[in-house]
Image (cartoon, helix red, strand yellow):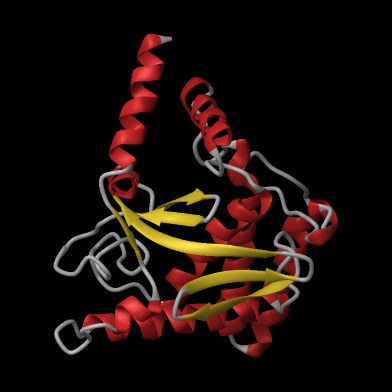
Amino acid sequence: MTRWIGLLALVGLVAGCRSLEVTPVALRADAAAHPERAVALERWTGAIELANAFLGSEFRRTLPSGRYELDDTGMRFVGEHATWPIRVLSTTWGDWVVRTGFAAQEREYGFVVGERSPVNDALVDHSLFRDGDGALAGAGEIASLVLHETTHVVYREGTVGFWNGVAYYLEAIFLFRYASHSDERHANATSEEFRFFLVERDVDDEYKSIYRQTFEQHLAEGSTSRCTHGTGARELDL
């Protein structure tokens, strides 16, 4: 027990070392000296438009009906009966998350991300805006990450709150669950729905019905160890 207390204390200490909030107004500051900020903001804006198109489509089955808003202060997910802030913070703990192979980790207020090379500009060089190779992420990649983490926030699954976080890590450590973690199944479902949305949107018209049928067949097969497709507001009792 002493070892676990010490570990949790260390986690708390590390998490508090750096906490930089990423917002549009911050990205616009000193843009002349940091030209990639304008590119990152443009792709973030495009990601929000893409995510809202998905949310308005028939492919959205797990998140409740709603849409994103992005202003100078950041993002929010606005549903019919509730609004959730989706803040993005680049933190020291986020660096550890990235080093262990993940891009972000959910919080009650949104999610944390970590640095990715090259680290020249703290507002851009992190896992919201850069992929694993260090290139600036496209709008689709950013939207996918935002939708995944938003699902965690809305369903309050994963490391959303202290005790939820403790339960999340206990399951991961003692049951060796990662991709099949019970708190990842709704978020994974949203990610799958978004992938089907992107594919169906981009293929030639003659193939659209094939991908739609594949999607409906996947849903009909029900929950798996990896994904649980929800029913939006009814499942969340909003």
